[in-house]
Each structure stands twice: as structure tokens, then as C-alpha cells.
Image 1 (tube, rainbow, N blue to C red):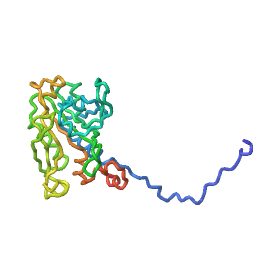
Image 2 (cartoon, rainbow, N blue to C red):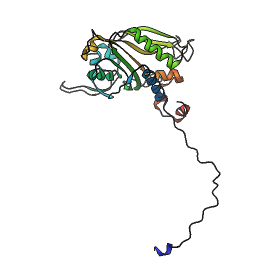
Image 3 (cartoon, rainbow, N blue to C red):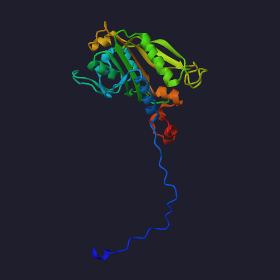
Image 4 (cartoon, rainbow, N blue to C red):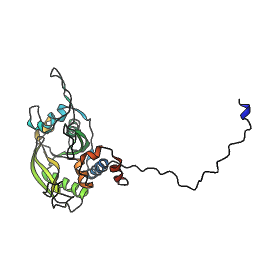
Length: 274
């Protein structure tokens, strides 16, 4: 068999190929809009000295609720419809769940690190909610924690003022409203002037001209004591915001379902965005 191929002439190159024609186009990929906004948020807080901390999405009840001043009979647990994975049949051992907020990461940081602490905790969280244009069963958060001596509410406000101006520009207006969160006291929600209607009123801001973007407050002394941090010596502030809400305002995307449907027509709009 080998002999009949020895000395055979090489195959002739086809004359039908035109090497002057352009090549096949290569589709340019892009980062997901949530990734773009998350990276920008992280970058802003890094300039303030915050480091990034991450933790497991499957969490135990203590780190997700108990350590954050939400005992089993606390009514605030009803505010978060939780996906429970496993509860001990005999009442012994931890209850496992999908984390409802990235505060569980803050708990693990306080558990393993002594003050000063300055971290942000980005990640995906889960809540048992009906999927709609305004709500989803999973979404993304960026939470922050700063604990040191002589930390005040003024430090919290200036940190968030800086973030808003860097993210949305110098002209955005800001207001704080008193609120309630079990793990902070005092607590406040932060609103910014609606970027979609410029404060004139629309369906996104519910015709008020303002959009709530985050919750915040001074870390509750009991939370500090849960991790052996002296609340008489140290104080701190915490805040948390949804990446989807920030993305909605930045890119004016008003349907949360678009972020997870992987529709190429939607994703192509962010090609070239850095």
C-alpha cells in the first residue's frame, strides 16, 4: 500500500479561492450589565479603602439571621421569604438555607477578623418571591461594613455621598429617611433623585421624583457583641444595596427579568461598554 503513494505529485491548489476577500466576522462578546455595574461599584469603594469579602451562598441560620440580631421568633424574619434547604428533624444541628442577603459575609468577617474592619460584600442572594418586572427569586447585592474607633453616622453619610456622586454624577440629589433594620440602630434609607424622569415623576419613582437605592445604619451593639467586639470601644456602620436597582437607574432597564433571560438582543446593547 505504501509503495503506490511514494513519489505521488502534491495536490494542486484550487484556483477558485480568492485570498483578497475579507475573513468571516467574529462576534464580539461583552460583559453582562450586572457585572459592569458591580465592577464599577467595587472600584468606587476600593478607592475608599474597602476590601472585597466573599462567602458561601448556602448558609446556616446563625450567620444569615441569628448573628444579625434576628432570633427565631423575630418578626423581621417575615420580611424575607427564605429558601430553606434542610432543617434538623430532631432540633439539633444547624438549619441550612440559601442566603437572603450578603450580611452573612459580614458575619463571617467579624467572626474571623478583629477591628479595624472595612469590607464590601458583593454576591448573589435568594428570596422566595414571585418573579415579575420588579422582583425576582434571586438578585445581587453589594453590602458594606466599617468598624473602628470613633466611627459616626457622619462617616456613613459622607461615604454614601461619595459613592452616589461617583456612580451617577455630581448633580444627583440625595436624601436620608429614618427606617428600621434589626442589625443597625439608628437606621436610614437613602433616596436619590430619579435619573429617568429627572425628578419630574414617572412610574419608576412612582411619581415622587425619588428612588430608594439602599438601606444603612450604625451597627447594632448586640451584633458587635455576638462576635466578641467591644461595643464600648468600637462603633461601625453598614449599608446594603441591590445591583439590579443601580443598573436600572444607570442603564434605564425597568424589567428585572431581562437580566437573567440571556436574550442576545438585550446583551448586544452592552457590547463595547466598559
